[in-house]
Length: 626
Image 1 (cartoon, rainbow, N blue to C red):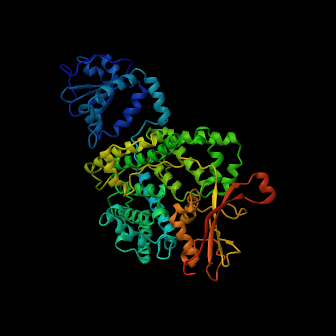
Image 2 (tube, rainbow, N blue to C red):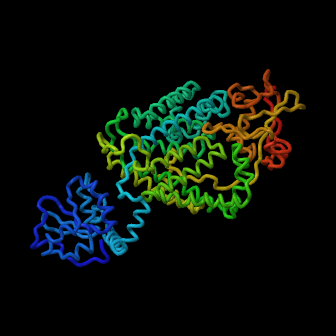
């Protein structure tokens, strides 16, 4: 590369061409050229010779003056054909294993060659700046082709752990939530769905519980999921484990009804589904070689992280919520979120300027960092570190079950092998690839489908009231039920108050005693809990119920009925049972508004919360037979 391109012959007439292999000739005095030549050399598979023009220009002086070599990189073929600039680079890379997709695009994709040559000219005339940027992005070492095998192994192992957490967390609550004596029995719900939809019910609500909806079968599914999660964590038959885990968790999520309708449940299903195509096609892990990894599957999962973060930032700005625009959202967030942690109380004491600055930082991470993970070298690592750090802060101040861990696990896939610390030998052994991988003819259409439906999903985050194109909307309706290609947007609207439901029971209708939840707010003197990554789903649903009314929450009336019946599984989800000997005759629910105490109030009273009664949420209920 040099300051300007010179018009030079495209074929040798008098000079002797290379005898056996193509020869790539570059400017040996150009540091930028040298850095990239070192990188490309690793992909040539010894099928292309490389030399600085300072040592070989004299061989071709009859056809190519030295100015030709100064002006641009040249590839001289054994038949005497000469390629220049971007085309020379792409053609040389085409000699590598599997050829070069960029060379195919250069020759066949309209406009690609023109843009590539234009970009080459810009770099050629600004070599100093290009070299500076290369060093800033990759450091002093020459840039290398990024590989992600260590990231893939860690990602699959962490995904196995997350599946285990999610399934076991639901398992210990399953009887109380969807069992025969639970709040929302799945058997009766499935019967109602089948009666309403007929044969379409099986397609509309895909779950294995259509075959058997007994409590025992729910336990069998959860036990199988827990076992498969352990196998996945050790990378034993990973593809089979991922297929079965996705099927099991989808079945549980559908059967869980309102209790399994959270964005992280959808995120886990989408991550788990596309991870099937990232997993190595082998039975057991191998220490001697790596199974080839599909770049298409890797792209889909990184695209998922981009959509998750970027859409979460966009929806806050397009929701119309003024608290995001005037940077006051965090003045409310810490004490209005479903399950704050003790650190949330302390974070709420920070001054208003700090809260506003934190909102700005959050927007920077959610709107800028997702783009950085597509950049090379250090910029990508900065993007990963930003998202990772934000998730740690969210996890420190709020109990969001496995969501933060899953998001950080997706971040792992953007950390290339060269960025991981290396222990032992100074020189890493050369990478050995062995075994099959998912074919491109299968994954390229999958990528096309993902990108096709991602467009309207992203558009919706910018324009929430927009409608889908009819044809795409119909197709997406068939995909959506599997919860594996989703829209995301956490904290779209910030709640600015904290209504809280307090459930009370009575044996005589005069003296009322409160039920306390294990993790939801109740006693003002009780510190907020640390419960993540476990998700107490009844406690979470109580927070949502308080934002509406009892008539809009049928499950809540069922919950009160179970208290009147003294259902052991449901009572087991509560911290206290004020009626241990026999169930109460009456129950009711009152509404309070809670707020974190100030530092001064806490020092005086020791209380974490203040509360004010707002009225009745649900009137007195009793069983008909009483």
